Image (tube, rainbow, N blue to C red; front, side, top):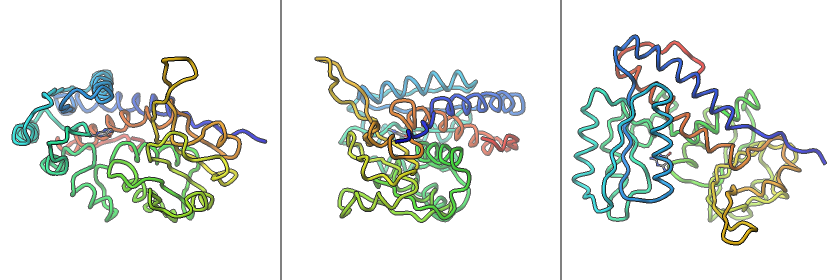
Length: 298
Ligand code: GUN
């Protein structure tokens, strides 16, 4: 049996960060200031702390200003909203990302809705999601936009392809479906209540798995030659006592023997999220400063 081509998201993300770095230097020269990204972390969730640290490091490496706001887990809704409003008003800040999930006592939607749409680099405000649904230009959530970039790089035109998105989250599933529809795919959104999920997935030329269940998508669900994008990052016990390893939502070893192309975990979709976040911040910076963005390849 032939082996699927491995889609190297790590290399694609490195190339995107390099292009962003070049465009960020040109922006700073024209605008007289660096593009700036503010990240807000509430509480001490270990995975979120790792993401936020990586975001800050890669923002600086790309030649942009990074503003990190770490707030205690018992921060009130009013204090968090007050910070968002300060960042909305700060001319050095082009993008605002409030790391999710927030501690349970905070109302995520109410906080996100206070982010100025011009600084919504996560693409989560009603304005951004509405514009995406309408097919208007705007800021799009980072992970699904990264998945789309990988798909277009691999397949070229996606027009007319059958795409199945597994998962309906606001961060990935729903915006992913909108993006694929925008590329003229025939889109199905599958989720935990979907009946006969294996049969639904078997129809797909493109499978995007974003459910957060380790290795749920099996080899015999995959249409031969399909392109498989695995958004899952699940930590599971490793063979060696006391160790863990990362796996996706797809049974990678099995699916690789059937698919035409597949993203690995780690090294597939994961590195794309921050690279696209930097790209979105730079796009927002150009709009906020009234400077034309010359590199259309971003
Ligand atoms: N938590 C995990 N991924 C993301 C993301 O892309 N944006 C935000 N705000 N929180 C996240």
